[in-house]
Amino acid sequence: MRDRLLARLFHLMDRPIGAIVGAMAYGLWAFFINRHAGLPHATLIGVSHWLVSVVLTISCVTLMRTLFWFAARPRNGALLAVAGDLTLTYTLLIGVHLAIGTPNIFWTLAPGVLPTIGFAALYASLLMREAANPASAVHRGRRGARTDDSHARA
Image (cartoon, rainbow, N blue to C red):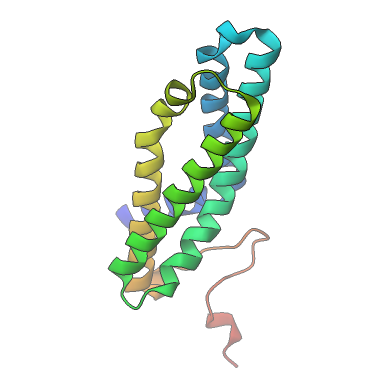
């Protein structure tokens, strides 16, 4: 039961729909917290935050997978993956909000800090679990192709 739940969670975290829905909440928050800047500017802020969040969530999963496998030990890989994810995420988010003139960058980003750290830590722990037991970590890629090597044996 627990393995099935973790596999489904891992599956959801690897899919764009999770990123789209999650980012929608943050885009609405960015709009709400900056509404005093005027409707057009607040809309630009909210839509920009939503788009950047979707792209970041999808690309950071790939980044975390890549960084995880650079390290010699799974624990070091998990730390590297989390650090890389958070660095990219907040460098890009702060840069975009500076570029579009968001008046309340701190309050715009504040509600997402703990969920972002939680997402990165949970995904890194799922990668560690996958590394510890590769046989039970078979999952499907974006196009439904198996990403394990069991199908390559002849």
